[in-house]
Picture: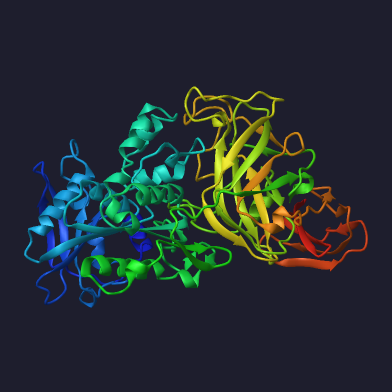
Length: 619
């Protein structure tokens, strides 16, 4: 547990080797019910009074003695604030406090009240913190302490909602287990409410209170954070429904960042997954400091002229800004699934099938994860192409930029020979060098294709084709010229999401596993498609056309036979690491692969200046 907490701590930008000694250590702050919470106070040298930044944490206040946030590190005297760090009720130094009748917002209010009574406190209190440390800021703001002046919640929102645990109706198992490991103990409650019900309605309504926000906020999120969809909804709500005086003092910053908590990537760091964003490094800290200085110190830093939304356009790797309440668009471009694993702006023919075996589920590779065993952020998905439980559909090479902002959805026509299955989708950018970098993903449990209540539940009948929509997490992305759009479609994404046993039985209990043969239909009658939130002339003008190319046999022992309606001029064979093993001009109908070792490979061919890739297995 300690190692896990150190990882969480390091992820949010801390981690100096030496330690500071708090000015006041393990102070007991009395709450309204007579219980006490434990706190540390850090006061810069020679400071008599100062404004306070309050941090409330379930991850052990003592860890802050290794480094204060916002780039301060151990240089307490280099900044003007007094820091008050408090352990949550029930955690670490506050573990003995009674948990039977309280709210974290009330505890936050009582901590603010205690701060105002201290001789070293000047007047104002700002709050800061990521994840759970961000959610508790909203809980505290709801109570409206008169000295709580502003808040900086990172990768957080206050609502406890159904799809926060059951995305597309499928339990996000890895994150729930991680929350249990951190001491929240949510599994019994969540697993007792697997369907959307009155309990979820009550929870969602009780934790949605934008009209109670009466202070300015800087809300910081990441495109690879599991909270990003609800964060954008919450931000819009605070712009529209918070106290009138502060509706135009709600700011939003979204970078190419992960949630944090595992691995090296942090909210605001350059390295994210297998990609690096140098122009995003440090922005979260810089903007947070400017915001806090403006509201707590009356700094003349021109913060009030900052555009209300600052967001990172991935792929193009530039910062943009807006004063709207949302940055997602309301128009959509459609790319249809076609035969030969192609994406086109016209409907295709036929269908494509795969096998989903719960005993060998396709693996989660990066993304908006939260578990100590899973990578976070953008990772290459190319290894999925060696599996029999994944089908991939790819566009032609982009001849101009293709930009999206919002939720990508897939309208799929699905048939299966089992009563239930999951449909997972991973959207990627195919780089010219062959990398298939994850942008966003999502999943849908087919029994919940009509909704998430028990009454909505509907099982599948073999031979019947069902329409279902898979929604992917919101993103802002541009495919550059020379890149391609690709969607991987499969039955599972484990370990992030629960593996569907596909037997139609009670969920989340042990049982027999059924192998499912799943078919995605794509024809004029069953036009499966990807809906891209944007308005791109390259797509709407029918300039992105599919290339009809196939190869067989696959798997193969000695040769690959190629078929194409258009001339193939060049081919290359690469391994799953991207290393080119063979490359040559193409002059006949087959390629000799006898010399290859057994394993999985990618064949790339050039057709009319466009590179088309196909996975194959050498036996």
